[in-house]
Length: 77
Image 1: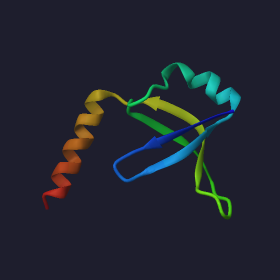
Image 2: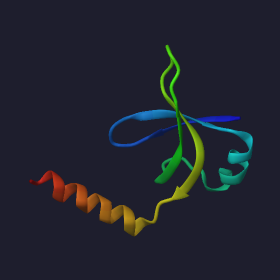
Image 3: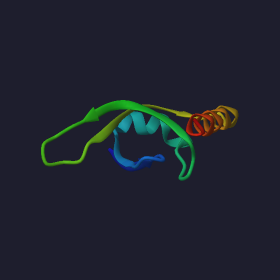
Image 4: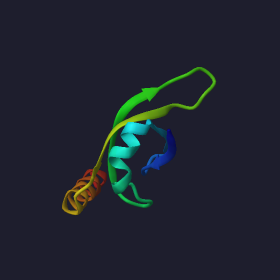
């Protein structure tokens, strides 16, 4: 099992990789890389929420540029 922390513009969250998932995606995991993470939220009393990672995708640079433009346009209204 592996643990990491992912962050975006709004905050960060701890993530958990079970061995089979980590083995599948470890080659694409890099610090400061934009990724799409999917999984289940683990909510336990007296603990911070965690994402139990199921899949990870590298984000395409052109898609990231488009999303940033949309955010900028949205924030101008």
